[in-house]
Length: 305
Image 1 (cartoon, one colour):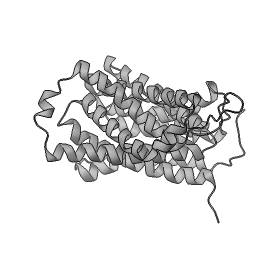
Image 2 (cartoon, one colour; image 1 turned 180 degrees about the vertical axis):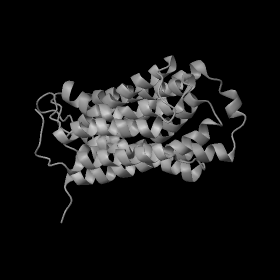
Image 3 (cartoon, one colour; image 1 turned 180 degrees about the horizontal axis):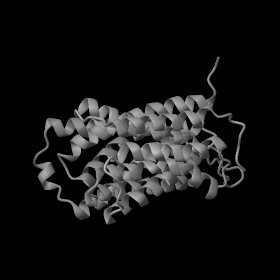
């Protein structure tokens, strides 16, 4: 029996969450060896150039409307990533930052419904508070205090939610354009433009705020390895698969399945870095998986207006 596009999208997005968790570990290693904005600039530029070599024919066929939609997605994602890095720099509680950032996925149905008028299944609305509770258990082991630096994560989460929504809409036909003009952007071309846009924005920010010479003078095999892994596996492969999966999904709220990313991240951190998961964190993982089950097992016919 052939899988429906929705099921294919779910399976691919689960793979994306695993790649995202692995990428987090790659990034953690690389950030210890070079400034954060410079790392993101190199990472995303390499990913974009790699995809461009493969996707040049698609890029050449894009019309002006497709370029505008793609650049809009890229600029939104670049803004979110930049604020996320600033949150890491200014924030003092990593767990709270991880919780706030993860809320970006939870906010996707909210943006889809109230900004773009998408119909969202009742199962998704039921799953959202369950998912938020699970994320809180997983990330907020020492309580929650919204310090000034955490506002970067709050705005970043909102921008990530908008990015997921815009990316889904750009990757399929659901946004009306000029009659007779193709508005859907192929996954490869869209991902390439987004990667290069993020790389360009973070290059400018790095050039303004960070010194490059110490990194250039200390390039070693270890740094090259982590950067290449982050660029090719954690960026090019991850976001291409994500965008293709989103092109198969009828609605942007399908990315709610990506709430399992922190579960993978915590599990891999335990294996890779020797971190121990507490009973509360294990409970958080269970609640997140419960939210995923609620969002997918509920009858799809139950829709909100």
